Image (cartoon, rainbow, N blue to C red; front, top):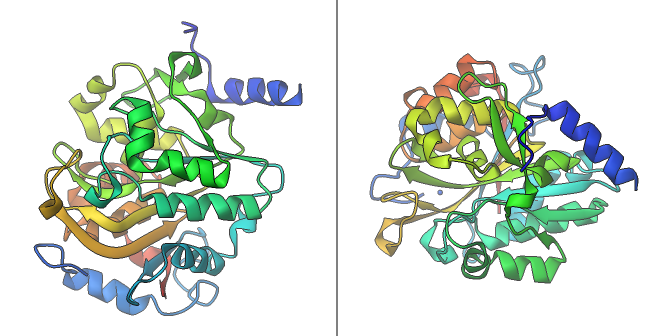
Length: 325
C-alpha cells in the first residue's frame, strides 16, 4: 500500500488518466408516524413539489402487495417513477453497485442484500448504456464464500457484471477529511467509478442500532475497521460525507429484526416486501428507521448526518411517492 495519503480529487484525476489508456408483526408493524407518511405518498414526484422545490430531495417507497409479486417489476416501477435509470446513468459509465454481502449467509436470512434486487438494478444500468457494472464490497467473511452463499456470484454470471474480489492491491489511502477519520484505506473501484449506487439491506445492529444506507460504507474501506466501532456514529457520518452515491436503494424485502448484523436464525427475519429509493442519504435512512418503529432522531448517525448537512431527517421536507405492485 502506498503510505502517502491522496485526496479524493487527486484519486479521481489519476483514474481519469488511467481510463484514457417491510407489513409484518412481532414489533415491526408500522408506527403512527410511518402510517401518516404513507398516506402522504400518493402523488407522483413531479406533482408533489410544494415543500421541496428548492433542494431537490426525493424518496420513493415501494411495496410489493400482490401475491408472488416480482422484485424486478417493483424495482423497475420505482426507477420509472424517478425518471428512469437513464436519468442517472449515462452511456459509457462505469457503475459500481455497493451491496451488503459481508456475511456468508443465504438470502432468506436477511443478512445480505437480496440477489434479485441486485440483479434488477444491474439490468437497469446495463439497459441505460453503462459500459460496465461492478459489484463491490469488502466482506467480513471470506469473499469467495460470501459471493457463493449470498447469491452475488450467480448475479454476476447471469448479468455479466464484474464481481470485484476485495484485496490489498485495490486499497488506497485517501484523506476522508472527516471529524474523526482522516487518511484511511479506501477500495479504489468505488472512487474510480463514474456512478455509484448504494444497495444495502435494512437490519438491526448491536452497536449502531440500525444498519441501513450510510453504515453500508464501512464495507467500502479497509484498514482497522474494528477501530471504526469505537465512535461508530461519527465514523459512519465521516464515511457518508466522503462517499456520495448517485442513489441509494434500501432492500427491505426481508429485514433482520434481531441479532444483527450477522443473524443466522429464521425467527429473527420479518418479511416486509419493501424497497426504498432516494437521492438523499439521510432521508432514506430516516424513512427506513420507521420500519423498525425507531425515531430517526434516536439513531445517532442519522441525527449527526442531518446536523452536518448531509441530508434531511424531516421527511416532510422531502418529495415522496409510494409505488405498489
